[in-house]
Length: 277
Ligand SMILES: [Zn+2]
Image 1: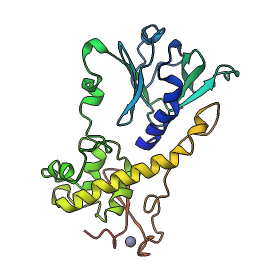
Image 2: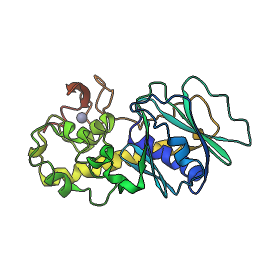
Image 3: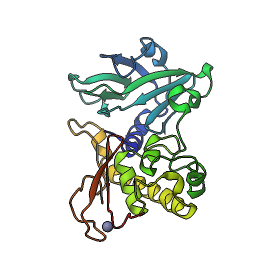
């Protein structure tokens, strides 16, 4: 499943091809995503120019003067850029959307169709008010996200710190893999109640979250060219995990076997020695 780093790398890959470019047409071959693609979408954006491509959490925001196209990769979505000077491939079964610009065709492929492509009209106000975005926590790279932020927003949270990170209302973009990895770096037990983690350890954790996500984005950065004129590869990637999916293997710090536990139906991996409290 694409996590924040994949979405950010997608944004960086697409931005040079779509920003300040005018949409010629949009082809919707399949509208049944998590929510249906609005039937009027092609007419709304044809002839309009993408000012900026931004990211909020795992949403890509295609900003036009008159509104914002909100897209989400769901479980299995990928965007690819095809230069129209070369032949754009005949769409396959899962190639559901084409956004066609003068020089490129930007194509959404999504076998499982849990993604989304929605329109927010500028007359309704800032896109931040959209129901999908309004409840999101702070961005992990926002300078305001630090130990104090994490500390203040977890004082009334009895749930485990792992589940609070995943919930996305304190900070966005820390999915299952990166929650386990961040907690390992911060040497915090994933089962510990969030409100029992002190200010100093909250600061360590905030820093660990940013490091883990930045490293993953850097790994993904090496795949940028795969977004243009390339078929096949999913474009998903992962940093070299220290605990995630390593149950039974020795901890890279202390050699204790990594443990897997279940928290809210999601697997959590940790080192009982390094993360004892
Ligand atoms: Zn260890």
